Length: 216
Length: 397
Ligand SMILES: NC(=O)c1ccc[n+]([C@@H]2O[C@H](COP(=O)([O-])OP(=O)(O)OC[C@H]3O[C@@H](n4cnc5c(N)ncnc54)[C@H](O)[C@@H]3O)[C@@H](O)[C@H]2O)c1
Ligand SMILES: [Zn+2]
Ligand SMILES: [Zn+2]
Image (cartoon, rainbow over all chains, first blue to last red):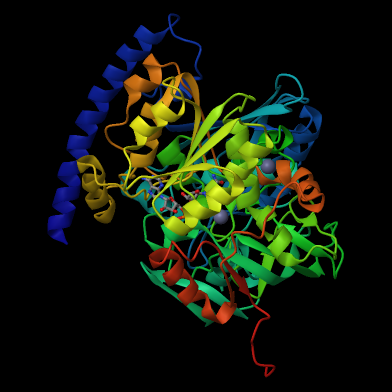
């Protein structure tokens, strides 16, 4: 125990040093990047711009922009394809996301919509009292011809520092990035086919059913 | 229900497993009347395709009667249908442009990562063909849950019996697409490696498409005889120097198009093929591609290379220089089955295509394990095995 603690302390100090060095280096890099970069989305860069974990992903969905926007704007719909999100309920101007974790535990995130451009873009961020600091945005742009709509999801999150953050990440069981990517694919599938694809043989073997089982 | 399940390399068994049920509203449940063992199943049997789990129900060539329908299925109970082995949603970009085997939605999101890592893009789902392609239970069973039943299955008329239409599920469209990918012109000489079911249907299709000469290559006398019966000239690769023969038989020009209907487990005695055998055994993912390499060297400059044979990983010493310097066109892929079923059904009905000549064995589903073993070890005489769940089974239930 003591050993662990000492290690932990030493680690923190070393980590702090690294973090400061990292910050300086990051500032240097972002300085260099300003202006002169290529046309790729910022989240595809080899070295990240921000200290937060950032993820971004685009899918093309063969449905009109307005329809997709409307579905997403009604946050109550999101748990239909976001596997870890149990419910999103309204609380005044805020939404409270109840996120599943193993052994019946949950994480709560309270968000506000900070940008809403009809048919084009929705952005949200967590407010005081959330277990995780996070921001997200979804953008809808017409795809060429009759290919439908390009939907880009960008999220950043700042898990509580160090061990607690890792514990929460573990609580989610997979990396948020993988989860978000799968969720976006499920959104696409739901919109294009009206259902969530499953290779289960029987209802009790679907992932949704299994997750409920895990909770009880 | 009873179903053929995978337990390991060369270990498949007919077990009792849960019956499937409707999960999504576009699903249907099919009671299987006929199902076949495919050369592709041998890759699973030989353990060279990753992502198969013990207990998985195999089989992707099947047909039967509709016994249950979800609320959005367009099928009706009692209809006889043949089910494409590629599972396609009908609504995504690739389905819309008829590239059904590239469907973006049928493979569940959480199963797409493996193929996305390996190939740069995730694969569509296939029935009974590993969790890399979805992990859907297959058709070598009494019942199958068929998703997107409003898109894939084709209803067949009662006067055509199972043996005639079953192969619409895979190998007939596969042979047809292989020939189509060879972009055959009337004066062409076309060479086909492999006289298994896929090769045989590719030969028949190439002839229907008007090739002036088709040359078939294999080493099994009975399979070569079937090719000859279709109108092909044949080469036994154990007895003849294939490339030299092909040059002579095409008047010194080289064949105009080549079709690799062999795939990743090609037989060959060249050193690099033997090295690949070892790598494949220790899971280094080296595909044995000796037939394909030979085909690329044999085709004339500016010629076409069509690859219906299945490959899953990497291969060494690929003749990349020949490909570039000769300016070859290559086309390949899992078959876009749904694109062809309607036309090919007509060609079966009007007698343009014969689909029964290659069936060598009909067995009850209970004998499926023996079917696998013999289809693998006695390839010459076991050209195609059809399993019939209804056959010979005792009436006790
Ligand atoms: N693209 C698709 O959608 C699709 C669909 C079905 C099958 N396939 C693939 O097509 C291939 C053939 O299937 P099949 O059912 O006919 O298999 P099969 O195993 O019955 O036939 C393969 C034949 O190739 C012959 N062969 C082996 N090495 C050879 C060589 N070096 N030169 C010439 N011939 C050689 C074998 O003797 C055998 O007769 C397999 O790889 C299978 O997975 C692809
Ligand atoms: Zn097949
Ligand atoms: Zn699709």
